[in-house]
Image 1 (cartoon, one colour):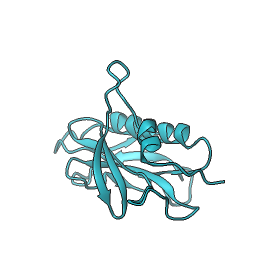
Image 2: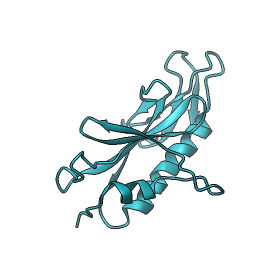
Image 3: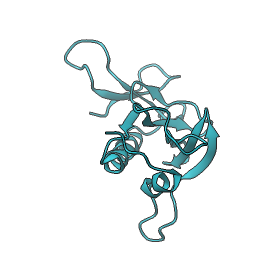
Length: 150
């Protein structure tokens, strides 16, 4: 059964500094009809989070999910097919934390292009074959920059 929770409950589930308890996230207000947040990872990348909580405080239907993905500092997606969706079923806070940790680890493991210096995009192999589902990083500008992440 879908869990209904408000903005305060959602924001309590977002990461904080372990020492100071200060939020590690920034509210962006309402974007596309729901509350959105950014969590800085480093100087070139952030995690974008869409809460599934609408201005009236309610989710939009039973199948609403919390969506997270990596973006550059301009808000452009870093890669494709690797968004993390967290259902609003019981235990969503734990699954959201794991999704955020996974995106954080992928960004740290991928790094920047050694040629152009841009953050590498993160992708998932979607075609059939022995690498289907594996996660990798590559540069969108420089051919040949490639790193397996899983």
